[in-house]
Image (cartoon, rainbow, N blue to C red; front, side, top):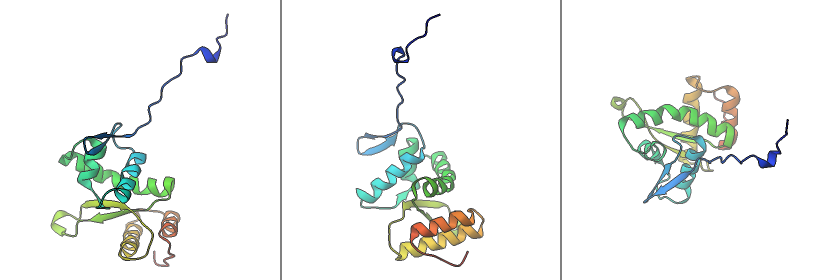
Length: 156
């Protein structure tokens, strides 16, 4: 019985999920991944003139095209993405809802929170209050989000 040297085994190639540039747009090679979403949103902050990333843009980037099915799939993942970005990367995801009641207040865009307590900070506080009222987050997660925003709000 011979024992094989571990150095003789072929190495397993692990391909990291990444955004691939096709023409002018970036597309995920592995579907929706939170690290790729974070990378795409950072691209909006650094390179693009529009810092908000629409649901259409996320569907095109993460799922390849912007069909109604893909937009619904992206909207379903935003809540999970908010929690994952908060816990893993200490980033606050600001979510913009459509204000028109006839459109059922669907999510229309997202962006990463930038420092400052201007209009974006007030919007983020309102978002946290709505999420806490609907019990979409724990008190511990709420306090962590308030720390990232840079404020201590006594109102749950």
